[in-house]
Length: 395
Image 1 (spheres, rainbow, N blue to C red):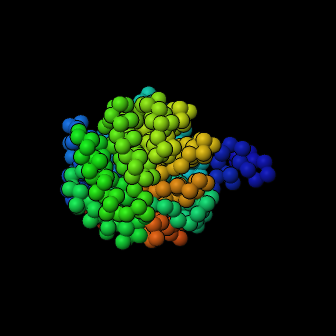
Image 2: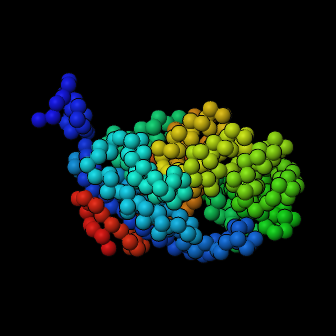
């Protein structure tokens, strides 16, 4: 019989344990996109058009019959690597109390320590970490934002999926009209083409189409060098933009800081970084007015919350990248009024939809993330593996 004091098992096997993980299922799901997507990286020859998104789903089950779901993703490359790494470390979760999320994140990091604490290794952990937070909120009967401590029940939102460079500017303007009619509040369009004057023509056309009251952002996807960025960003000042996103290479904290000091328009960046430490370089350099972390890219919600504390301390705005099904909760829990990026790409994967109205995205009253996997997502599953007592099995 384990020794205990005041009803608490001193050896970790008794009343202090609320529940135990008895099953984990990992699935690799390939989401096809209706058309090849091009931003400035394609037009400058650095990448091919994007035709699919590969997602890693984690489903965690407990002895008490509870379950949580989480996901991460990869664009163009890296999906198989994320699945392979998660498959190696996920058995370490069996028998653990799912409430101990921070400790479990550290345990999984050390299980794969030889491949580091950023990039594909920690992105593989993100799906698991998100699933644990989803499970914790479900146990409490609360939406995740309420578990974290929400500052608001809705967040400002802007759309990106209608503003890519593979479509002519006339189509981008039509997309923007439909997006605003659907209740989304802001529009972001892509820039960064080889001819920067064409960028200015597109921004001029979209701004005239939208009028002066609609929030407008632009995104160069890291395609300018420092002299070009300074020239084009100064030319963009007249359009009253909410921000100019990724004008420089994501790792160029000093260059972004120089731009931020020179411009009245806010500089936004951070989506391509894969750790809290990398974001800290932006913060300490004063390189961003708007920080754009991506929870799946930096290792999940546990890491995002650490970064959010640093961002709040620096009085930065927050506009999380992609994965709105996760980020609406995290943004709602951030003290400074944030933005959330609206992407409709993941709609086929879930049975539920987030509500947009009046320029804002609303939290649902469903517990956890508030999403369940659709039958279509199951049909697009290319590989899956289960450990412990999870339903299903390897295929």
